[in-house]
Image (cartoon, rainbow, N blue to C red):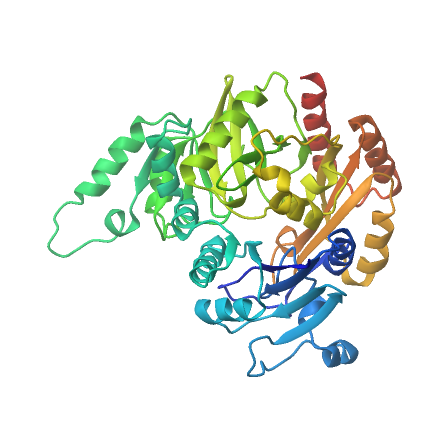
Length: 477
């Protein structure tokens, strides 16, 4: 019997595919072809909106005529799906750009799925796309369709860092001491107020924190817009500056090792993956454009068993239902929770490489694997050692040949390039993420060293140094 599965994602933010480009190797279309062969009794319908990270490639959003003409301009026709394509005999792709939540749910319903799965991604300025996907998911549930997707309440709590902190505190998870700052009350004044008592009280509480502190938006994306203040004076200046244009959280900086992990959750059980170690920037925080990741880290001095137990408790408390990523700090033999992202993440391709799978295979296996519903599910497959490192942006005239060449390099399993041609600074223009995987780190570092020697402009010294540092920490633990 054939099972019909709809895999969907949305984007409520404006996205210009004429200025922002992505390229992955293997391509999403190639991944879907392999998945079609692997899940021979499943029909997949992909329903997404530009740029459709993880599910589709840039060219998939063009019509066949546009591909032939080499253009991407298109006026949306008045039909539910602007673009419809066959990726494989049992995989169809639909681009549905201008549909409301209800209309998108109706379109997915018209495909008669037995199951709908949210594959949420992120897009600036707000990390709230998982909330939109949850709204679609709850609309589908009203139509009697089974959905693997976080609830609107869960997604909304995770989107708002202040609500996340409150829930973590209420359930006794280790999290950094903090002070919430309401922008409306802290900055704006009224003509009938002589003194801003709220501002005075907030600054009074901030002064009690241990410095340095991290100052971040309550609804920002990753570490974008995050500041680190070494003193109370610096923190006060940041909060009173013109760049402060929203609610903020001021929290103590937890000194330690930065980690991240993903987990698959449903109503019955939770599968927690082994964590990866992250590098930090000059301010001691992770940066999506500069972070190096190494792992997975197994039961060592880092108390991984205790961490997994806490993550299973966290999944139950937050009622997670689907894939989720958690940012962590290990400090003084304790695990601290920084953020929860109820979606696919920048770690997903890295986890795929660890399991000898593509990103989509890893995601769909984790979501659909019937072993997930058993109380004592175990992943018996051997995990590779993995290193995820950033390379400089590969220019358009070299991109195809050089990225294809890198993919053939020893131990390389995955490449993903992000390019923003409108960015003013070179690093902001983008980067090429490359993932190495092998049975051990010695093989990976040997391959990286060989690449550094052959293409010195690709492997920058600071990224290489971070990679060496992380691998040494793991190997010595």
